[in-house]
Amino acid sequence: MGTVPRGRLYWSFWETVSSTIQLVFARRLRSGPMVGHLEALMASHFDVNDLVATSRARVSLQLLLNHLGARPGDQILLSPITIRPMLDVVVGLGLVPLYCDLCEDNMIFGEEALKLAVLHKPKFSLLTPLFGISANTGPLLKILKTAGCTSIIDVSQTADTYFRGLGVWDGADYGIASLSALKTVDSFGGGLLFSPQGHPLEKLRTKVDALPMPPKKVVLLAALRNCLYALYATPLVCGLAVTFFATVNVFSPGWLMRQSGGRRLGVRSGLPVALVSQYSDFQASLAIKAFRRRPKLVLRRKLLARELRSVVSGLNTSEIFVPETDDVSGSDFWQVLVYVSKPQEFQKFLWKYGIDSGSTSLSFLPGASPDGGEKVALPVARKIHAGSLFLPMHPLFRQSAVSSLFDALADLEATEGEGKVSP
Image 1 (cartoon, rainbow, N blue to C red):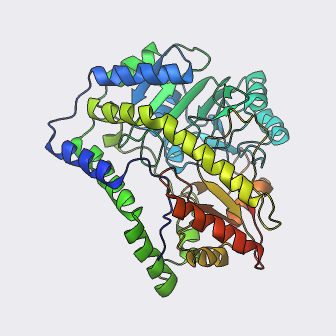
Image 2 (image 1 turned 180 degrees about the vertical axis):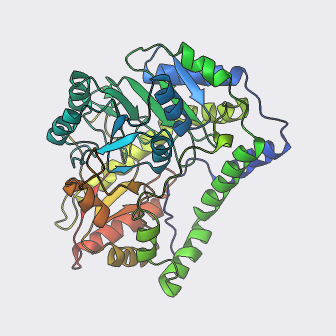
């Protein structure tokens, strides 16, 4: 029976249930000293002078773009594979996406592609380092600065990631991060807004303070969703589910690929009003607790990455991809991205080991020129979109689960499969 769930969980099932029960019996959510404590804690982590907590990372982006004077028709540089809720903000504000192809070395932008993209004079750029890759963002941010393009970096998946001692956010004009489900610091919703370049945030803080408190039901729904994630991550439930998938094949890999990573631009034209709110003391207390246990989880992720690197180093069919970096500030391990020629068949292959892999919840954009006309060439993004699955690799793994994943990769060497593995 399988025991390896898809996903990255940092609260156990019982921890999640306990927090949800506290929320049920809590009175109205309010803002207070815990929010200020968290902001100071995270400002120290990102080594910035000021930081503002919001209800969601997408809310941080919307407030920031409004603060920067974004107007309908302004161009914003985006990756063709990005976090879907951010597109809600872009579409809602009437901005025009300008797509720049990915680079396999950093999973953000290729330098040459970026140099061509900035010739169209985008006003803003949203960099999204994905999969916990320890990317060298310095050259990209330098290109954007030279072009006069305001750089915003979303470090939701890379808040603990450094390249040669520098955070991947260093050098950006502004940074945002998520404190919602499946992140290292998970507080049932939440976002951060900061400026590595020291731009003042007083006006933004005033706007956040003027927002209403989040409706209790919004946070409660996020907590209940986390309970389902955590329940599914238990060995018994995951084992039953994977056995069901493999036997009945109701949730086939093809269905997953179409409904998740394969979907196109199904975005909202703006954010739900209930999400645009302040950050509560209840959520801040959860975030502080999660942040304090973070070093142990980051260490566990790095150990898993090291084990995986050792296992696949001798395989011809699988190769772990680690961008150039030093051992001390190695990648904040997020998940394993596997490129395969036949992703559906590969997912069925993993089911034999009880491993529930899946496609990404990120959105692939078809790509268009700045005037909305002909499609632009996005060869790397299309390659990743066409043949990729995500293997689970979270720090609550027991050794038996790690062994199952390694056994599957070793068996892949003896089959006709082919792959390229990337953290």
